[in-house]
Image 1: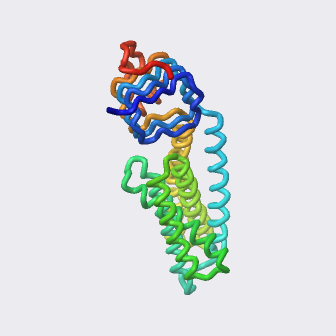
Image 2: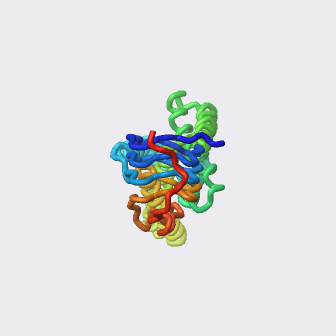
Image 3: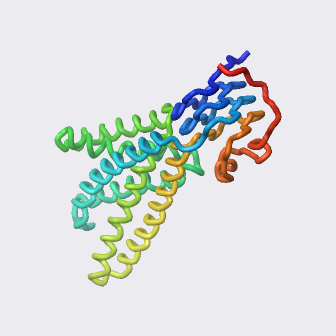
Amino acid sequence: MAKVHKWSNRNLRNRSFRGQNLQQANFSGSDLRGCSFDLAQLQGANFDRARVGYGPESILIGLLVVIDFVGLAFYAMSQMLFGALGLTSEISTYPYLLALLGFLASAGISSAIFPSRKRVKPIAALTTGALLGFFYGGVMLKNDPQAAVLMACVGGVFSLGMSVMARTRLVTVAIYTVGGCAAYGVCFFSGTRASSLLNVQQLVAGIAWSLLCLVFLGITLQVIANLVTELKDFAHTSWRGADLSDVNLDGIQLDSYKRSRYGLHNEQVNAREPVKSVSSG
């Protein structure tokens, strides 16, 4: 028999119940703003009159994570890309530039599409973690190329592990942030290269780089949209992937976006029939 949890009339803001077995749990009258019930077993749970919505602390934490990783990613990518702006195909290090652009592109594209392609998430985690590991590991180890590659592997594996094991969406927020910066890096470099080529009348190459710039501008905007959605879900009470059969959500106000996102139908939200719940604890 499943353990019955008694959490009624309590302040539970910003707590994570991700993946927990909460069948028949009683959350009636509690403040659940910013809580995560993702992938939880909530059959028969009682959320009568619970307060749901955005947790102010969660909003602040999410924004701080974005600001921190934007700073880390932009500094790393600006240092790597600005030094490569003048490289041409005749220079021996040009293949390394192409490899860098390919890595940035992979991070950006995977961050743009993995919400609808869950199997792509490991690629996004690996590439974004490896990018930061490569640059900052190389800086810390006095720009030793072999050490930088080793730290890229460490960063990628660490990011992948966190994306699999962490019980918070902040890891995904960080991945989106770095992925968006990577996509913008390709967009910026492509636009700069296109401008220089068009100025010297190299139309074919200039147009090709211009098209690449436009493509990655669209990818950047898609990653930003993914990031905003993830921030909203992180800061808001969330039931993504949870089993909500026979839950009592009487007295909870959820807009149509949240109902559809979490698979809640109007009859579930407005249900008045009692569920198998325990008395207040």
